[in-house]
Length: 252
Image (cartoon, rainbow, N blue to C red; front, side, top):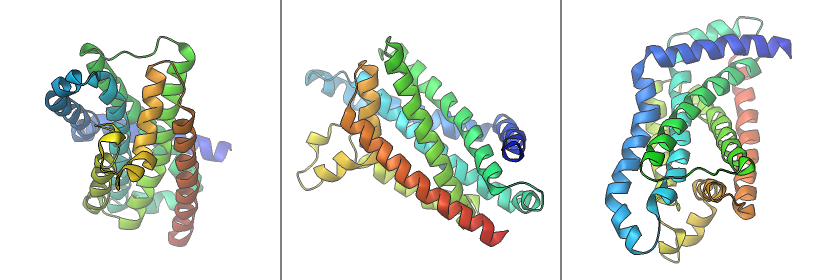
């Protein structure tokens, strides 16, 4: 365990320092989700208010999920940059297990992801968003975010490993991110979708995660959304870890 944690801590520190050194990394993690949030508030806030929906309270948890998706995309980009610079080959030549490299990326992405979340929640709070005052509900909110960041960091890292190119990772992931957001209850309730598309939106992991976070902000528990989010996270997390391990061992 020490052989994994210590090198992972060193590499995670390196990843975090690079985020600070290259402002565009922080811009993509923080400014982009924030701009989308403000855009949708400008478009739908008044209309939703006429229908009795507090749109700031509705959309802020979805913006948190979007920020987590962008964090996963940043993980893919970061791995692609490391491969291009030859750093991954150097790390493989060291007595460091592949799990240490993955753990380092997850740790750095947790820092980046929660930095994005703090900014988005802070902006939402300035516009009327309310976090739960209940400690268990707040912990539920944080735990869902942490699990999503960790799983999407592994998935993004796998895409970066397979493409080996930062620009290619963006071309692969961005359409998937946008599609998953559009066909979900992130911006509008699932009941607004056509009947043939509504079931897809309801089981979309973005919808489930958004609903779980919305329930937490209301100091309640949406059991179906939490179980659905957990099922997606465990299933995809295990699958992506297996493929990541195979990739490292094959290329090592």
